[in-house]
Length: 322
Image (cartoon, rainbow, N blue to C red; front, side, top):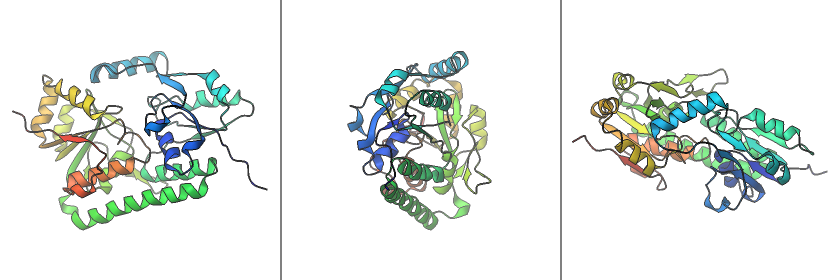
């Protein structure tokens, strides 16, 4: 007897939506998304069931808003419980890694518990590239797309292996560049989890959030960590990659320009020879399939191998201070 698989899938986070859309046949199963799910563009017709309660203003102000709302409400999202129930999903994709990134797992499970029949809630909380690949397998199995998800996973694994091969051929260990990745700039926040791992695979030395081996045999950094300008200068980075969480390259460019009078930022600018701005909305911070694109970018940029850099990633290297 054929197993019964869900055919109505609801995604509450952009990375899970990208996984569903990357698995052949997965996009057609989606019945709802979060308002922050804007990729791929042809899912815009799907209804949204969660919305953020804060809007971007500036780097410093959004940091203040996040801290205040988390203190006051414990969440940054409004959930449309009735719409979720009315859409009758069989499978809900969510996460428990970052309460700033999406609605918390406990809220989703409470809503699911009130539904009849109760949908499966799949928690996707990757902290490294291997976890991301496992998430693809888990989503495929939960959605009845095991074979399709295997092929998709293997295609991403092949790209990761290619980066490792190219870097091994081009980057002697004693010339590895010292690389700092920033999730935010005012205040300075160093990228965590998969970011140090990607810098290491790309042939760099991750700074201020070290790569650590864990009991499961996988290596990754800790949570994102707030640092000072002095910490950055003292770390002596050769390259700083700035991909502010949730910000497009255009928005980040404007915010960086507004920091011209910030003494701490100017100190960093004067001390680091190479600083590159990247799209942190779609890449680097979103633990979906395009982390592989992000890995390819880092490897290509820090090693001077432009052919590795995906054409779809927009970036801008800052020139010298005048």
